[in-house]
Image 1 (tube, one colour):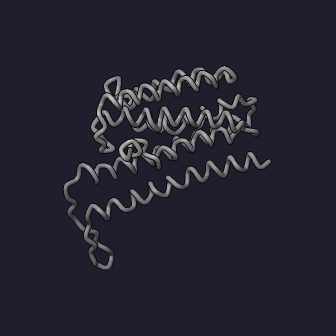
Image 2 (cartoon, one colour):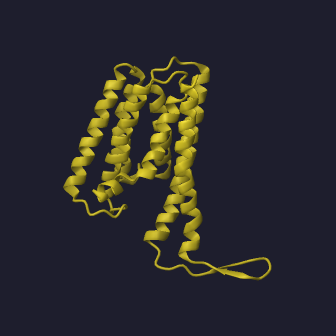
Image 3 (cartoon, helix red, strand yellow):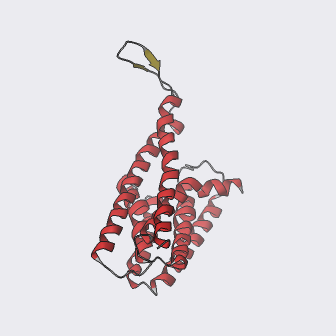
Length: 231
């Protein structure tokens, strides 16, 4: 059970589910039931399916879950997510293209299809940052207005920027944790004093920044949603 919990990768999963909430919060009166269904779809696709597929390539989360189990979980969870998306699209027709695009992004990025050309920082930022915001908004079947489009555009841009920051921080942190045997060097201050460098010193600001963002993004999304529901 502990390994399945590790596979879910709760801090990052909650972070990216928050983008769905930000998208819904761009609608004047978000429907809580539609939002819950949209969040569930992304939990299944990104939180479960994507991580299961990613674990099949190099075991980045360090689990020993068998490959057949990971494949089964990935197929079932992504299929269920698509099923929820289809149900939502019946009331929000503009969601159909996003329902079709979602599995392409999950499979293409995590299985490194097309020669790995979909496994890039840019695709990650767009698929894991901007896409959930847009889906959360469109699923609400909003009445289109200039203000709404600007709001969701700004939220999607924030999602892309935050996911870019996440990717850069986590890539450097992962390189230090998993692919660095030793760190040698020192920082020399203007007064001539020296501070030894080690792996822990380099990791602290990276992991501290990621931890702070894991709290900040969900709290911002929650605040935006509560502000909408309060009026």
